[in-house]
Figure 1: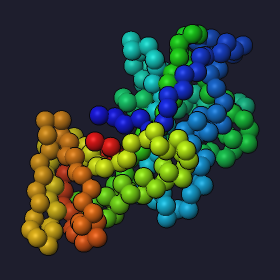
Figure 2: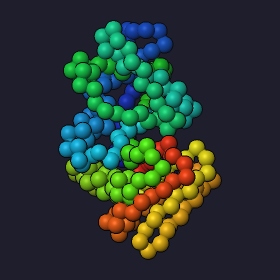
Figure 3: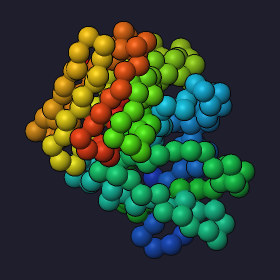
Figure 4: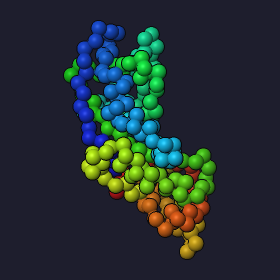
Length: 222
């Protein structure tokens, strides 16, 4: 289950005097500030290096798939596509030039359609089939601490992150070589392994071995 980590903001599309089939939606700065990306990247690197921040942009109209909401960043004569994945997400690292130029985001959605804005977080994955437990699972306490600092008083409405969902393209296995014996996990029907944070293992920091490289590791509250 996807965990939305910010209250959704519904923004109506405005009418531009621009290219046919496209409409100006909102400023790039507004997106960055809504998702709190500016505050997240203001944290010291050591407090966010295990966490990936995504902007999640989802059409309110359920008949419109998120990737069909074509978004383009317009900065003067420059046009940069902002593709969304199937969940409506894109990785968001503030671009200082776009902020300074007050660049705008345009969309292909018809006038009157709305888009909800929220943010998701994921864990940084090593490009290896073996890694130590804390290098990835340490993203959970890091994300909880970061949410508290970035969201401020709103953090009381955000659930505490407790697990990481590893997503694979095919069936996979995970083995944790703990001191008290190996712990084995097999992916489910959706090729996913949900691993809840174990504070004792976080201290022990054992070796974790994967049969396949996951394409994503989603931090979740369930």
